[in-house]
Image: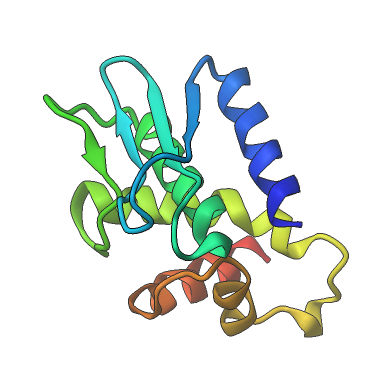
Length: 135
């Protein structure tokens, strides 16, 4: 399922004329990044938490969809605030439809969503808000 979601997010990126490169030669702890000037996302396919790769891709997509601009590459950074917080919110919004697929309302909860994509605990309030507003 993770590979299907990643493929779907890649297609979404391509539809928006964004470039996505999967790199498997990076350290397992090197975060994914986005070059906003060239609309290019580099995803570390060697990331130590494989279930988190769709979240990383969605986060970097979030920067481009939010029209974030930076003089240098933006690396995946854990934050609830500012430019990174907005990218995390966009990532959650992009992932919710995949999570909701084939689920009954009583099966939906933020803990399960976060576990599905290995989303860090500090984002639980944001996940809860976004899941609630999605319904």
